[in-house]
Each structure stands twice: as structure tokens, then as C-alpha cells.
Amino acid sequence: MIRNHRLLGRLLLICGLLLLPGAAGAQELYTYSVGVFGGIGGSFDADPGGSLSNTGYQVNLSVVTEPRTQLVLRTGRLSLDQDKFFGSLRDAKLSYATIGGEYRVRQDFYESGIYVALGGYRLEGTKASGRDSRDNSWGLSVGVTGELPLKRWLGLQAEISGHYIDFNEEQFFAMGNLGLVVHF
Image (cartoon, rainbow, N blue to C red; front, side, top):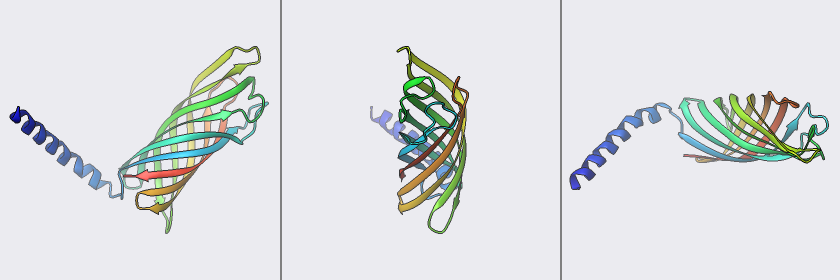
């Protein structure tokens, strides 16, 4: 039993030493980040329901891959109920998960970034007939970010993004998000 614990300890030490060069090579102050955001958005081509003041939330999970480069998973939901109808749907919601690369540039007191991501999107709601509707599709998003560091491990981040999704009715969406990001 003691021999198994020693073997396990040695394997963990070897794995840790193998992972150190990758983390050190990134030359960033952090390796991982988690962000929680609140936001607004909507669709440009929804008729009716073209309001961009619908509310939502987003969670970002990121890992530094190279200096000034991150791989970011963004997942969230946008409630498209600002107007009575969103296209032919009532109580519509857009859920999404995207993954893509983000390139960042350091300025004097903030960081700015630009990203491109691929994702899966779901538009749900109720038809006028009372029947539930669900439309799933792939999509592409592009966006810009800006982060103001509050502490070494904490930042205030804003994002503006555009999304192209091949849904039956609406295809073009825009979102703006603001929230806190924790780095570790």
C-alpha cells in the first residue's frame, strides 16, 4: 500500500514537471480565467422583435495558449422577450456556446482584444399556435474585448460581439456584455 502511494506521488511529480514549461512559456501573469457577465442584445433582422435591449448573461472560460493569445469558451443565454414577439415566437430565448481564439494587446492601463469563434446556437420559443419551437444551428461570432485590471487576479471586462447564425427566420445578432473576470 505504501509502495502504491509512493508510485502515485512520483507520477504526479513527473506530470507536474512536464506541465511547468508550457505554463511558464506563456509568459503571462495567469494561465486560466473565468468571467461572469451580464449583457444586452438582440437581432437586427427580427420582424417584429428587432430590439437590441434584451437582457442576458454569459460565462467565459479561457486558457492562455501563447503570449497575448487565449482559447476562450463562451456560453450564455439571451432572453428575446423585450417585445411581445420575436419573429414568429413568443417568450424566445437564444442559448449558445462558442469556442475560438482571442488575440490581446496590452495598453498602459488596460488590455484590448479581438476574437473569432465558432459555436452552436439554439433559438427556443412558443409559436402563435401555442406549440413549442426549437431551432438549432451552427454559427460564427466576431467580437472585441477590453479589460481594465482591478487587481492582479481580477478585472472588469466589456465585450461587443456580432453573430451570424443560420436560423430559419433571423440570422444576425449583436450583444454587449460587461462583467468581472478572475485570473489564476
